[in-house]
Length: 145
Image (cartoon, rainbow, N blue to C red; front, top):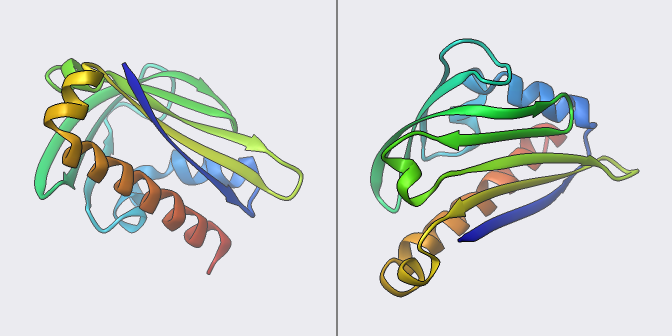
């Protein structure tokens, strides 16, 4: 298993970042130009189901999942449903206060690390780039830049 990780400092409180995530259904398209749709299917809470659509490596992906661990203003962990979960079981958003704002860390885990690095390196690289762009975009959005 490999875990991709993107870390960005944001001059915003953990509460502001978490509130933005709570409203992801309204904010998703603004977050990244490849984002199409986000829905919380039964509210934003631990155990809630989610649905999203986004374009990755030139292909539209439609994914379902659920929030498995939610700690207000600090953590959102999620798991994807089948068939996405076969390759990418889930990820997280971690928010840590750092004195001058917050550190926002996004993660995604992938199974079959050796196969992916050998046969799907361009796809993994495009996911890394996408995650980095999301971090920088979130920073701009929340800092008002």
